[in-house]
Image (cartoon, rainbow, N blue to C red; front, side):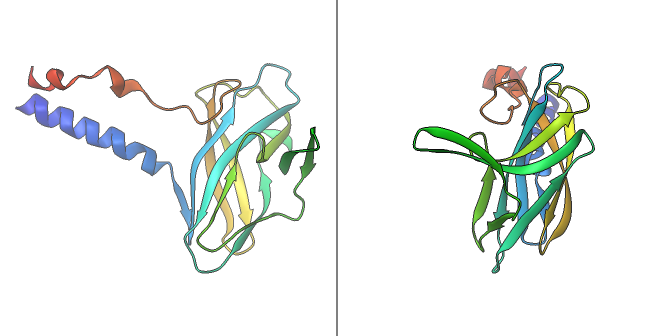
Length: 167
């Protein structure tokens, strides 16, 4: 019985852990903050996250900053007429009231220019997001594998089976 209770508490804690990674700043909720690992000598790195605006007014992500690179900028990558372009989003990006902004590969993203050290899978990167209304918000990006399409998921509980709780 004690093992069953302990296992239930462990399972509940592991399911709650991802919610602890969310950062809230007023009506803004920042989640799934991640970056891709980079090889040694990489001249750039990418960071990604989602900002949900639960408020009644829009806010604007106006800048990004991090001590891990010489420069950190908000960029937009898009394809027009078969040509991929990337440009700095120097005016910022609005997050509408009740809406979301997703920084993702192939779209808006954080560009770490001339990282001071390689981004290593499993480590973290500090990032400051500055919003027009919510102000400066500190977040931590977890580093996923090189070429990852999304944040690394914790699969440590996958080896558990329902029969294990009765032993």
